[in-house]
Image 1 (cartoon, rainbow, N blue to C red):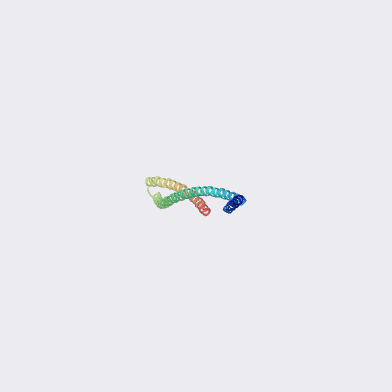
Image 2 (cartoon, rainbow, N blue to C red):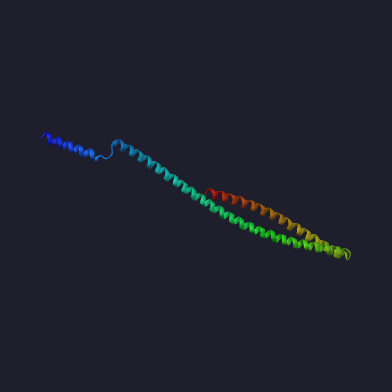
Length: 164
């Protein structure tokens, strides 16, 4: 009886040994490696999430900068139109001023009262011309500042686009 029990025990031991495919040492090593890979995977997921949020923020900033650039370009176009209109008006006033000066010279030879009237008109035209020139100077300064701001924003936008 001992023999069949011994043989049966031997077969059971053989079956148990053959069933365990991976040695315990190798199993622990694989389990440790698996944990490391899971930690690394979780870190990559966190980093991916952070990078995705950064990309969204940068895209939002790019959109706002593009919108601001478009607004500045529109403002610049309006300022250029206004400057051109004021230059044209200034040229017209200068022409009228020259005409009045010629008329004044002709009237100096003539009637004194007419001369005074023309002199008053001439002075008003001069004052009006000075005011228009001052407005034109201010608009040119504003135009230069807006152009500088637009150039800076365009440079920053290009720099951010390059980083993206």
